[in-house]
Amino acid sequence: MSRSPRPTRVVRLAALAATPLLLAACGSGTGSSSSSGGGQTVYMLLPNSTTVRFTAQDGPDFQAAMKKDMPGVKVVIQNAENDPQKQVQQVETAINGGASAIVLVAADPYIAGGALQKASTAKVPVLLYDHDARGGNAAAQVVFDSLSVGQNQGKDAAALLSGGTTAKPKVIARIYGNQGDYGTTQYKKGQDQYLKPLIDAGKVKVACETYTPNWDPAKAQSEMEQCLTKTGNKLDAVVVMNDGTAGGSVAALSAQSLAGKVPVIGGQDADLQAVQYILLGYQYGTVYKPFKLQASKAAELTTQLLKNGKINKSDIDGYVDNGFMKPGVPAVFLPVQNLHADTVGTLVKDGVWTWKQICTGPAAATATCKKEMA
Image 1: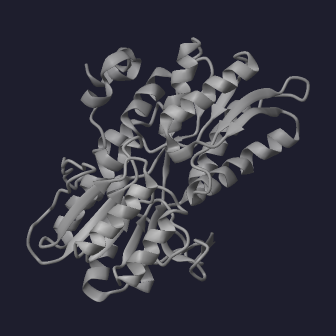
Image 2 (image 1 turned 180 degrees about the horizontal axis):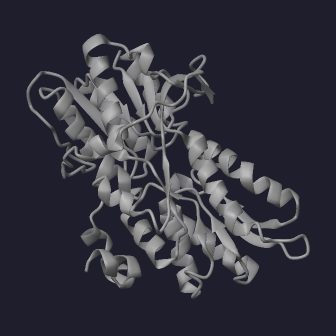
């Protein structure tokens, strides 16, 4: 990943938190629209529903932001439901339906390359959102600083595992994300900055490591179950890459009565279940990526594409290598925050979740929820 020399811009989250959340349905079959006028249509194509943020936050937030920036533009949201080929078909349908622009959260970075080429041939600009897509042209990419995400996860892991010795190393499992994703590569790179010295020194031993196709929590659970069988349930920690894989790992640990005893480290996305698991002590933390901020920036860049046919150079922070464009896809890198049990209230302040939503089920009995709901 290459960057421009200027530092990441400072963002005022409080103002963005005030943006009203549009609770619109983001179905995989029929789209939903912010306005029927204007003669322009933007398609936002989501990869799955298993990563909860896409349907619960990003889709509605982007829709609301576009309605604010260009009220006359129709926004259609569709979901590939973990089927990359279906997403390619959705791109074709969007092009044939007269799409003015496509905001793509790629279901698979490599298969999405064909979709980029189809859009390029049809002269429909594509804005990549969060996930990378390789092998074709894209106008720009809006992504949180993926290396920083991994570094925060690595710091947490090192803090909890630094007590190991060469005589008795801490034994861990590493559950990665979808293999080949730009994010997965950067998260691992960031984690390794803190874990590799401990591994090389013999203080941490990796008993199992595996990638999780499509970031599927059910697959992460299966991977974790296999690791527990392999190690005879002898693990000191599990290091993951997002809240979905964390949830799958917690499910596997729970089946062996190990949830809360074996920490799950490395969540991101601030899913509701993850926040509850953090309060319950099952998950150590989550890297919060302010979704309204990403949606707002995506809407801003989409508006530039619709009005001017290009992205302002002043908005670009660097580039993401997609194996096709040189020096890469122009990118906006957004800042992240690492949250733990004592700071999850940030999500309530930013309007992501309410305490009423968080404090349900077993989480209601935690000290934090008793205090907040009193």
